Length: 98
Image (cartoon, rainbow, N blue to C red; front, side, top):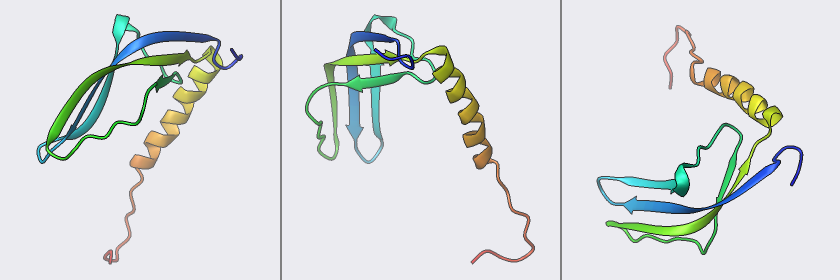
């Protein structure tokens, strides 16, 4: 363990992947109601998953959660505010974009 990630939790993860004309997504839900906080890292173990077109796959795999320290959590929250501010950048140029 390190000072930045002092706690490690092992859990099972439910993975849902869909690749179709209507949806393209991958979701991971952790068992045992484990809450993920800013700065935490989640690693799902196992071989890479391939889902053919027009199909949906649901499976369970083990996962490792590295819980962030208070310092990492605070840094992540601060950095997120600057990342969010980039989305609000607007240009008021009189010329037309090409």
